[in-house]
Length: 439
Image 1: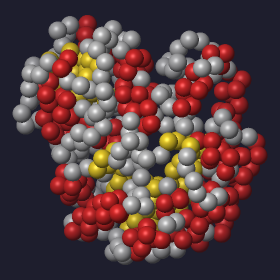
Image 2: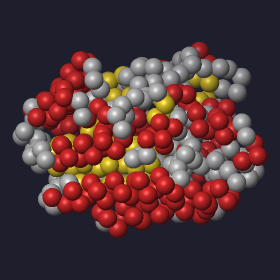
Image 3: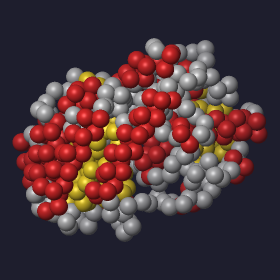
Image 4: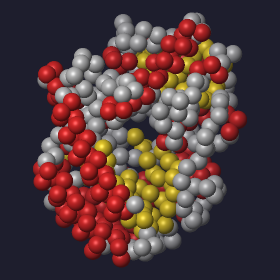
């Protein structure tokens, strides 16, 4: 019998979903019998039958996974009634009461869970752990206990069941947790993740860099963080240290992608940092933005800066021209409530302008825009605001977890069908436009 089996990725299979689970596995595997299951499209294949018995099951569903995760949870509880089901992750942290409506869930973990799970396997009563919540016990979110261990899973044999592909074009490296911004569509503020940025253990991160750098099928390493760099000394020092590790291990054949905000990229301190690494291939994931300042203000609550049009244009203009920058992906939020037909026209105009005036000049680089579908994430300010107006709901369920194709967008609320169709139309229109422009 296993001590713990970790399950995640019910409806999408990519390395990013494995990072928190990977950290937990790497921390516990030498002391306990731990198994991993990351189903490849569990919606199409029945994986429940191959899951062996375990004392505990640690399940981390994403928003759109919950419909399928509940099926697995109920099947496991039916087969192994003495086993305990623990649900964690950002969805569980943002919406614990909704998760606990599932009768088969024994415990819910709020925030970080590596050391919490280690304590439980060591025999500590879960009801005595502060960030464990149940139907009768409240809990507090743990945002600081980032594990001091690697996140990448190195051995195929560690997995229960088949994996479609271990690596993808882009491998994700966990660098930090937390975000200082209060975007109205995001879950982070309700999970306390805006209160403090907690950075990864450098020795663990170095081990991940060493391992990922040797895999020939991986062309890009992405430093996963809401903000790879912020205008403060601590952030600057940390990113320099990470890039120095990349140099130390001579990772010159892969593009190092940083998740950024455009208003931080245009700061002189950041430009100097990028110029300090001419030997590296660097890239940027700029998201999530919009060329309409009104829309931007609507979802970037409390975020000040120059016009989105000027900032975004200058980002592409200045960084595309740098020899060591090989990749820029601009994400435009599409289909949000504040959007109008005029907004769509503004976005199309500026995307076309940047393409013709800037990106077409560098055909050897990956410079492009992508439409980012808007979704009200559970626990976000948008979600709470719309939740007050019950007349918007098609039914009483707060989430669309069913197999109707019209409801396949992650975590969209049950708003009136005609308004939802309008949002879908605008989103598809802009998504098709970006595909036509950049392929």
